[in-house]
Length: 221
Ligand code: DX5
Ligand code: ZN
Image (cartoon, rainbow, N blue to C red):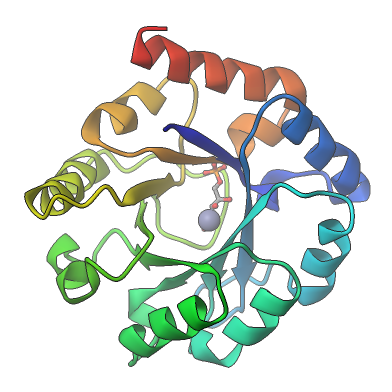
């Protein structure tokens, strides 16, 4: 199943609740929530108060992308305030196995993310433990960047690693995805598509509809 996960990093925070509802009503299945700590990535985005506030206005799947050092410090809190999927970076912790177990013990789905320079093979020790692999398609830290073309081969390689093991694990892509290039990542094997600027710049509802239309076109329906 193809899933659209709009990233609120690109939203207008003065009307965040309204924009989330627009995305949800237009058919987006997840909401991508980028948490940045100013250490793992240069920028700082937002944290717990924002997540718990928007949890009150929406039942959409909260797809939380932690771009923070030592994510093990905050897994419990994000689970408590309403995260459904918690994705952390392989590069950010010395104990990825424990973090995956921690997320699962809280009844949440575990996502593992790799930056563009991290070899895809680095996820092999965890390949049958995770619910989702996030292959970053830009350097994490900022919205509005361009898709890194070498990502296509990395997505394909990741899909191959899962298929060789008969695993149907979700592959998420994040960064620089638009209606014009989404077919490239879908063809390579991604099925959970993050889009920030492509959804929140302009009319949110019609942007979501255009992206879902691109999904249907790819599927031939
Ligand atoms: C980047 C974030 C992305 C970002 C995507 O570090 O992880 O989720 O919001 O934004 P766009 O779609 O504008 O590249
Ligand atoms: Zn993200």
